[in-house]
Image 1 (tube, rainbow, N blue to C red):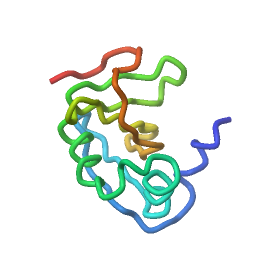
Image 2: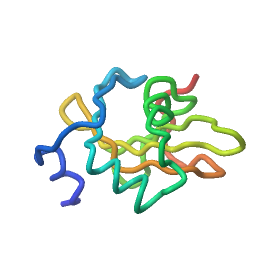
Image 3: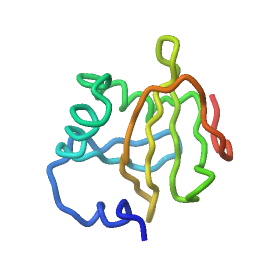
Amino acid sequence: MFLWRLLPFVSMPLRFSSPCVLGRRIRLTESHWQVICCVKHSELSGKDALVLRALADADIVRRSRYDSAVYLYYLAYNHYWLCVVCLHENGTGFVMTAYLTDRVKEGDEVWTR
């Protein structure tokens, strides 16, 4: 079992809970946002509004090749793509991570603008 599957059961203050282009409500806790922007991907510090936009107005959404419950939301940003990785379960979801990349990963395309 992936550790990510246990995270929805941990009660923490939310940074946001927002609808995505697929009609699900996606949430992100304050503490997990701090891990993403301060520890893992410091280039995203102060860009939580951009992460919200990637969920609500994505250019491309793909399903992971490795886990059918994981979706990758892509938004063109400068000369890169912002990728927001979410786990979908029981009609909702949560942000696992977010990062900037120079290419869209392989996977089944489930939505495009």
